[in-house]
Length: 204
Image (cartoon, rainbow, N blue to C red; front, side, top):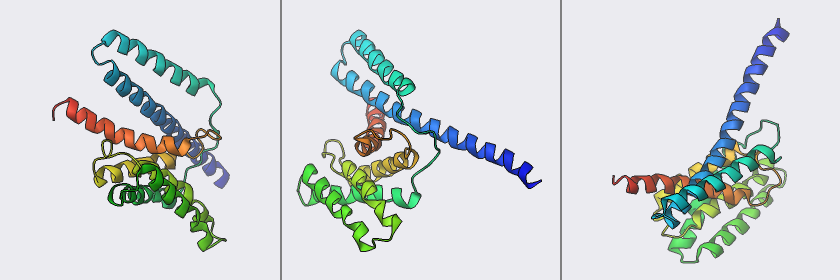
């Protein structure tokens, strides 16, 4: 009876994992698509035809790449929640160095990332501590945003939380592709910026 009971449960779990994985992939592609649309509309805001053509071409190329390039693994794995909570923490630290200490975005993220790299030395046997530097470094990319993009600490916190969510779901996505942490951070910032852009565009 136990073996028979396990089979449906296993299938249900696999279906759930697959659904989450598909959602995370589509979310990332959606973020990139939104960015492309925002960029083109801002550049060609008075030329609707040009904007439409460029948006269609860029969007088509991205989705073809997603469908046909081997950028993922088939395993259903996620980053640990206790790891991704360090993404907004890294964002706040970097933002504080950037805005309040006036160190600039590049130097601030360099200091944050370098300091994070020493965390595993606190306990060399801890597997948990070894996972923290990438999460903190990812958050630092959020915190290094200019004041024009991230006007307040609240913006950075929300963007950091969203970036943490992307990191949580994207552990086995775009494996071996450089710039993944930056893209995850960019996704968090973009989503908050998109909401603000819609808020202004709608005149709310």
